[in-house]
Image 1: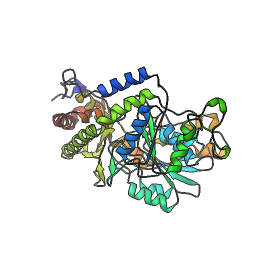
Image 2: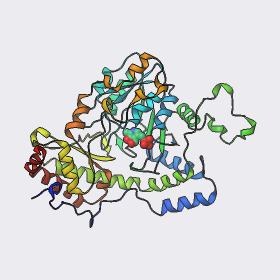
Image 3: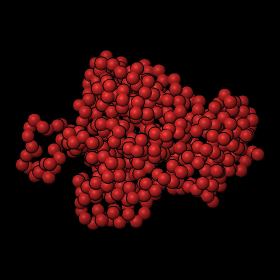
Image 4: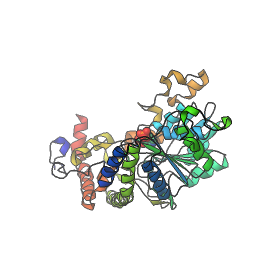
Length: 425
Ligand SMILES: Cc1ncc(COP(=O)(O)O)c(C=O)c1O
């Protein structure tokens, strides 16, 4: 059988059977947007935002949530709420979107990169503990793609060393660890609602916490330093509360239009998560039967899985082909992009903290920012040699779609000789 990458017929005819589209939306978003338009309440703290926060808190089982501009500033505000800044170190996993580390640099702390587990690509608890110094103030585990970081071990280590835990849950609205929704497992949770995420307003983010004091600071930080109880204060009076309680900050707010869209998205999150989980687990079972193909870890403590990307690994040595060519061949069969995991942060095109003058605070800090000083062998191995990732769109189809993905993987592997020839040129 000729592979699609070599001109053969692809496994999926995407012209006639397109993959599910993203974003998904319906009458809830349409009606909500029109209501906001006609109300004239277009900015922040409107009724849709309040309603969304009430429902999101209830859904996640957390005491407090706030909407912010995106899932990058959410982490910056979390760090500022915890009073983390110059002179502090924050531990971040080697595989994540650059924002996790960039937020640390943006508060003038040092991002310390540690390696990941080979079967989840989430932070290795052992590497985290080994990287702790007297300057460490916090850790940011990232719940990546279909997996949740080992929060039992990470929280235990953090508590033992007196460190704060900020969960980067950008990918994971609704996933559960030991029956607790992510975002409520550490001190502060951070979510992204950017377009590719599993609930979206195009852009947007959220922070969550069970701690009233942290919520209070976060609310002021997202809103130019205004204290939560004084957001309505007549600006001309200049009365923003007691001098000693005020915090300097900028505008990290969201609009009422985005809140309206998010309210709609929340109505279908649970059912979409269920579909993605059923399909993801089914695809795991199909791929585990394919030689040279390894699903990610299925941890029983993940009591509800959610997927941003669906990821799996191939064994280059066993198959005798490079993972990059495998991904290209699979993409041609399926008619959809097939990617590697994020580029490890010690060598990532979009993580270049030593390019901004404002980070040149002194020579020691400048050197500490250099990402290349960290060794991340598992992260490098995953990026260069094993990782295969598909968008969560593919998980919103039918069980037959999962069978078709497995068929495409098998077709590529069965015809690896064709790929080897191609590789030799
Ligand atoms: C793990 C992770 N953290 C943070 C972010 C940043 O979110 P945003 O794009 O909303 O700023 C992303 C976005 O891709 C992400 O994947």
